[in-house]
Length: 103
Picture: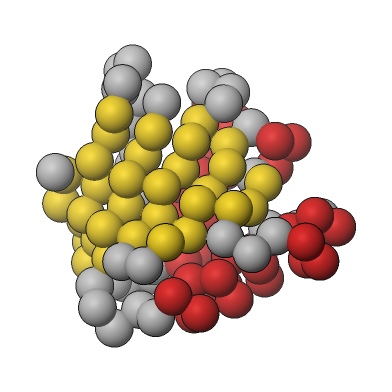
């Protein structure tokens, strides 16, 4: 499943990379990763690109979905984002502190 996140223009590419690097722990994310980051226990990957983030969900467990929600709330607290879900298999993100609209 892919989650496409469209962000506002006030988020620069470098800011996305820096905040993702702070949030996601691990040697790979701290030293090697440039624009693709491993999520917790390699359950998802976040690809940072200009104008947005694409999250590839590998493991669709409830714990992993909660981790993705925490990541998005950390990144976009009280900001507007657009969310598009590809191959959605009854998975819904419940973001409380992020203002989002579905695409």
